[in-house]
Length: 634
Image (cartoon, rainbow, N blue to C red; front, side, top):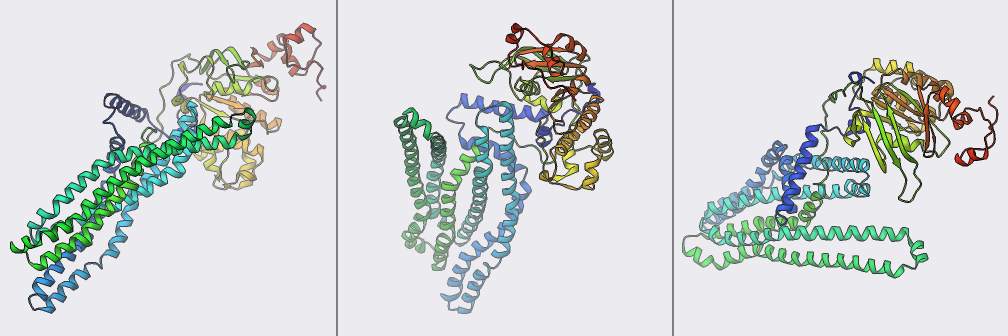
């Protein structure tokens, strides 16, 4: 296929999660720096630091939401300030001065300051969504990106971890972040109102109130890093035990048959012990947190009462003393207790959960820009190459592909035929890059296969077509969202999709996959691939549910496109239409035109219905080929 007519970057994963080369480079460089920092400073690069590095750009991008949240919180500042100040003025300027009406007026002012709390709460929660929901959405998108990347790289049980992150850990982060924002906001503006009120009553009050607050806060902040580490250890131990329990539940009969019950019990005991140790360590640090909470919340009122005689001798009025006690007991102490409780419980879990997302790819942009055309490959470079490729489904298994070399040029039409189980689908998967060969090399357009290039090089259509609930237009534009209706009309005429379009009524008609026949689903998938027009299209029995006439029409339509076409055929008519045919008999292969193979390949003649007797030696060399003639074609 000529590169200037390709539509690179329009395959399924690219459209779902597009990321430019610059974004990829930034992502990899970011994590390379993090790894380098971890090696250079293994004790300094903590969970808090990693989460902080990720949080700063998130908060900078939502500075407006933070400012709007702060604006609504000013009402809480005013409420706190007027609460203690009103009580002080009610005593000093009212009741103690013999003016009860003035005292009642100041108490009324303090009471009325509570009224704006209802609209303030409504405004705060409205602005809270602007900070909370983007976090959850970003974490879910990041977990999905990790799952897709892991699936392409075959990196183990990434799907289990990603499923937990999407369904459970992202909700923990969402709830924890919402609670932290609410509590931190309340503490900041309540503390600001209380401190301002204490200054207005008497600056000397701060000499007694601030030292225990500073001491308790420092003690509490010192417990955050070890608490986060203990939370992470506990979560890891819990996950390890859950995975072990799941494995045991699935392997009870095997364990009993192998006599491995004692070993299984010992492993369970070890994992349980690790979980118990992590839980106890977490509880010990929680005790230190309780001490810090007592210093911050209980000591200031006690010290104020102990220092009351000195303060009164130095000019503090009784009303100011009661007002200060009001600030400490009704505003500052509850705010400090709420903040420390939140940071010590949900805050620790939040840091641990967010840290588990920091090694995932960053989420793709919500409104991706149109994909840029990739640079065309040099003229004459094949679209795909297999060089001495081998593949086996296990270390001791017989190879399905054995040192196979194959070159597919631009615009070429190749058919792959062979008996069932001969490795045709395996070849398609290796050629598409979804399976890694155990030997040899696969190249796309002159370069080794990379998952990042898959979106711009190939489309693989399996036998079971993927159709989702939605409009017919969305299904057809799945690989290329910018396609125009005129191009869809040309495709429908070329592939014979008009009958389905007429039955549904329009492109915007809802598609319910269960109400489509298997053949109609395959036509929708074929139309999607036709519109994408990739440099390499691989049909792995993707027309098996079509009748011969519809299959012929589809293959001729794809053959007219400038891209290379590889058809894993279930009918030999596909081989007659192809420029070359690859015959597979397990690791044995033979390639040529239809006429050449009829004269040189006994298996191909057998598949074509031109059976002829063969000697016993040939039968032994070609295991897996039937030795009785097939029924004569009608």
